[in-house]
Image 1 (cartoon, rainbow, N blue to C red):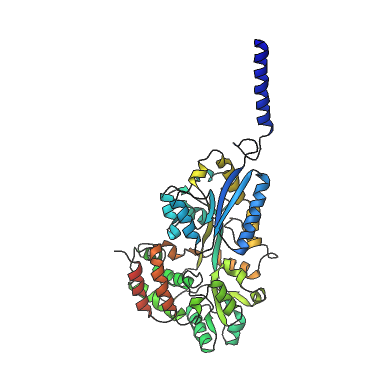
Image 2: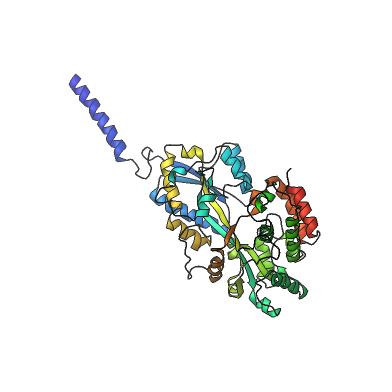
Length: 436
């Protein structure tokens, strides 16, 4: 009976082991039989972006059927608050798409709080190494540690409607004087020079500001434009005043009267798509808002050198605009980490890049990104050919204290309306940003 009892125990143990081994899910390392693993994922909502992201999740789940994604989204104006509140409450999503790790939107504080995973261990893995452009990896790295996976980048497209320019008896401007003259003639002839929104947090109207101030202050050294917006350098210097005066010549009084009430998409639809406006400036992410039949009339331009500026090398506002983060808590979870590693590999795949580029018209910062001319607009390829070789210009307001942006936008809106001279505007910037 003792031998029988021992044999029975052994048989039961073997049966249990067999059951466990036979039903384990190969796509779920570290999980028990049939166990579901829940991942919270978050992104900023948009009709096209939502559709593509949901399709990508379904693709990933084909190889990880045990993974259940809980999707959390918020519209653009509320998304930063959602993520900040999640981190403050120690309720951060396992993975989420967000802006690059810079002070804008508080990402530097997220890192300091230990909320974001240090992903440095993947830097030399074959799926990541040499996959992305150098600037994208550098931007994703803070104090030598990799905190983000680059997933999207944009450059600013500066476009002119060539038919309107020809009607005005002018040519596509190549010099600063020709550009300013185009805006003056267009306004005198009843056109709107700049078909942009001047509403706070709109994208396009900030770009001339960055271009002009970068030319005069440069993006290097203690007097650089990034330091100025970060409050480390004065705005009432002779160079900054000259920049403000040139910017005044270019934009003051040259947007639509109701531009403060429209967002970027509305301004494009109401003025640029109806050919009431001559110039368009915004990121590549705004291209889908331009009506297709207008695209062949558009010419991409370089932002021209400015007389008297300290730096007139070719520059282009281009940078990493979307990255994916992993929460440090999820990365430390022995069950979740292997699946998150597969998720990162998926973000680095050609399949992911193609979906972003061709389904959502969002460029990815892949080292070897080549656009298929049969699947994207010709104007995008032409504009990219100008952006690729140009020196990178970072968005200066990403270095500004978030609390100072609200008073800045109010003043900047008034400046576009022509309320302040260049010198007065420079002094206003000094009062808003400079921290002694």
